[in-house]
Length: 182
Figure (cartoon, rainbow, N blue to C red):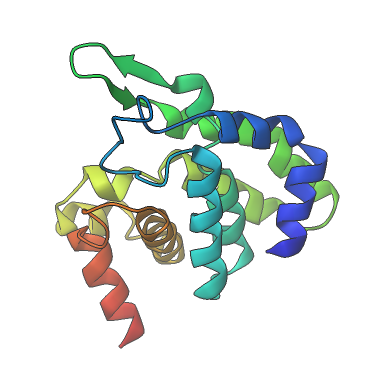
């Protein structure tokens, strides 16, 4: 993970800067209850640390690093309640990650096959929050069990890579991860 973070920060400092300057909170007095940690870079670092501590493979680690690249460009304020929203950041993050992932392939830090999965994981990283029907989830990914495992791992990292009252309450991810560890 250290090598990956070094690559990102030295090769793409503009992305780090954008994530540092992009806050989940409306202002200093109105914190986002899902991201009390504040800026998007801090969240990303927490997500990466969870992936490292859990020993997840490089597909999950790269996905953890790049999963929120689109947040700075998709950040909007709901003026009715002053909540910060990032609608569509998943797909935008995947689009922005394409040249970075290609760079990792050229440096032999990812294979071509892994790069395809990383981009798909990034674009779907919020799927397990939105879909709560386990049957539908298993059916959607029945031909791709390794992908579902990686998606659940990324969702776990994303969930625990924040300070929030809702941490660890995603039923599918919680149950899936418990099954995997038994």
